[in-house]
Length: 317
Image (tube, rainbow, N blue to C red; front, side, top):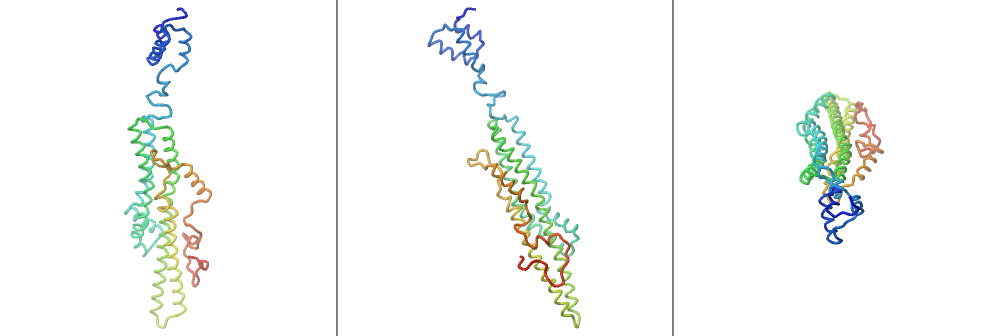
């Protein structure tokens, strides 16, 4: 073959694509149909197919994107993780389930007369709190569903958006795994309050017996009334501790917490901000209450009721 050939020979020789045929036709019109091998050789250094030149990968997805065939199962995996954790909590803390969890804890602790409060406390505290905490699950589930729908419609999702969702779910899962222990702690607090009420009822029964005696011991009456006051104060402190716990570790923490947001959202929630919060909690482990007080020290210990004085420091809540 000679060093110079016409345009058609060059194209057949180099087996160029239709795209380069169009380009060289334009060149032909401007400089003539005689072309050197050097021109052909120079053109060969360009991308050899239209897919490479346009940045399209195998399967018709551009570089930097993930096809829906690959992305949707990965998004579904995150949705399954979320659903499993949420459903597990629903089985323990949703309405009548909450009452069952509370009654079981009371029975295991040997609660007596105060068992009558189990259902009421469960419905008005545990279940109501879960109703708000559940928004932490519902919001992020809607984010994942929205991403799946968008991926299905477009046929792809960007690698950056998919990484954002997966990294966000990793952080979300760390936080979500703290929810169940938080409710177990709340039930223990109410169990402790029930045990305290049982002791109060016993003291009141003793006081009634003493008062029926004639004559009765004023010293014994004073002692029992002091015990009753101590127990009333302790019930109040435990109730306040339960409210603080809900605010710090359950609904107050989770209801409006957004670890990651919709990928279409303009002002997207930054994952590094969530990571910073997690690090701070790791350095100062989550506590049941916002501040140290006598109630926190007393909780979950055997009830040794003092005869006269309250062992809590003066001024304790």
